[in-house]
Length: 311
Image 1 (cartoon, rainbow, N blue to C red):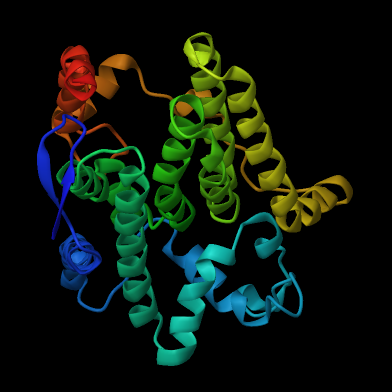
Image 2 (image 1 turned 30 degrees about the horizontal axis):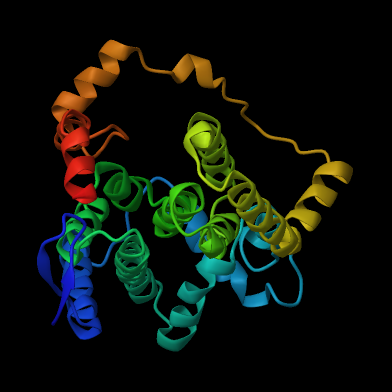
């Protein structure tokens, strides 16, 4: 380890790359340990859908239409659902000829890459290595991450969580840090585009509110706006490979579904949400009580943290 300086001005030991990789490996292994108690079985609400997606990738470079699964009916799953970041699981499957091994390896790789990107990304915001590693650990063990991974088998949402820290870091750098590193936001958004489209929309809304609420206290406003513009244009241009075919199909193909859910009917009341928070049950997509307390404490001591970093 080498000596560095943390945000509060104190000397701290900087983790070496070998240490970061080792810690990330251990955290990732601990995170997937419960899956080994499934006894060679794969569980999750969407597991069948995503296994079919895995098998359909066998011909994805020849045609976006999938004739491999679902009785050879021919589906456009890979046109409407991003598959580029999901492709590594197919490579593992081809090497091992085992869906189980491919799925478990993929779950580990998702956690390992998430931990590494979170660590090296947040390092750019000048947080101490200890703070960044604590964040990475809490992020991997957050209720939403584990719920998507264990109970929903939601590949898109889980993959998107790899890149959300980069989006946060990119926005923070452009608004208050080194706006010349706008490309970090581009990398984060591109990761979302090729993982989970809905996350792109949600992240874009969050970025919009972050810009609107903080614009008045920016310095170098022109340069920072230009940074966001560059990130947006590069992201859009490099996303055309996915969006153009999808929009073309939406324009000329009538989508027919057997069930059209009304989301308002399944919405939970504030009382129901609060009950789920208190239970902290991973079977439901709620905010864990521990994380809610952490958020409240961070808001309470926010001024103290700011003063400490300025001294």
